[in-house]
Picture 1 (cartoon, rainbow, N blue to C red):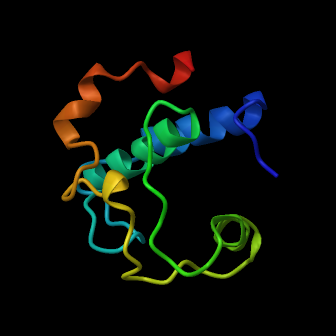
Picture 2 (cartoon, rainbow, N blue to C red):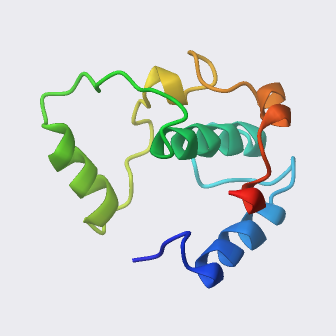
Length: 107
């Protein structure tokens, strides 16, 4: 499994992020490139315990949902609703809010 603790994996992520342009067309649904970066930033902040999330309102135990999302080799379904804290339209990071974040390379 890839890990940001591994320099080559961290470099790969930084390289991929550096290639994203405002006009980049994505494979991530209706989000623009900027909105997708905000969404990923919120997910990273959550993982680093810098942002709290409310439990997902699903009938599946969170540990099972996390396992399936991370380890089962299936594409994530399009149109799947994200948590409000990760959705820039419902409480997540707004694109302008990223300016005060420490650079990823410093983490």
